[in-house]
Image (cartoon, rainbow, N blue to C red; front, side, top):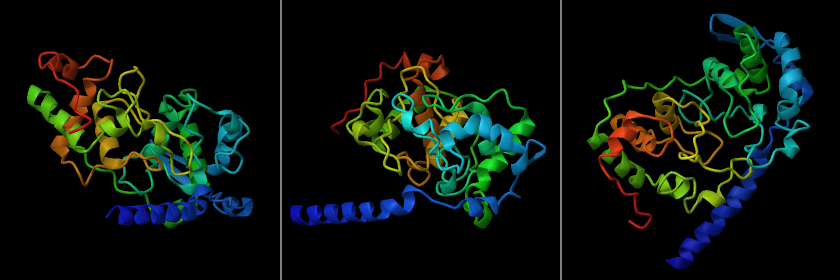
Length: 287
């Protein structure tokens, strides 16, 4: 049995190594990218155009994301911890922060919101100096780097049910979900990003990546409201080891998990207040 598992492990490793070149860089030509100069975005009541974003992209974005949108800007090579992850390769059309199911394209609204929100614990700042029209143009510019936005439509945003009342039972149930789907393996039993798998994680391009630390006061990259955290569970963060749990946990369980994770976080919340009365112990790493 052990020999069989070892054989399969070696075969899987070889398969992954063979697959890496195909996903490492899209390597599109300037002519191919230019062929999508008519790309538009439709968001916040505006129609964004590629040419109208050229100046802003070159002034604010090209240093990290590069002239070709491949994440190889002049600054990218200097980005090291804690400024990981590396800049997004727009040519691949793979995005972490989405309202759409895993594997699908984000909506224009998703890209629009990411530009405004920025990504905590990364070199991607909050671009609040842009007008909505500028952001809409930049969404079109980001899209024009990837042929996926021509051949595919964005996914249909997931439905987030109304947030239920926080109760002791829900927090306890959330603890059980945290243990069952093994969130602790990456995030640690107390949400401190020190699980047994944390030091081994890499993104789809092979760059080292670290899990979110729920205890250090920073915001989750894709939003810090309860609905944002719920959405992260159910869509996953494409391009990273964080999967979608849409097939593994029910909507009620996802809300329970949101409330349990809130007990780790420094921000004030009703979940933290309720948890104080429960004297919950961390989940066991050896169930």
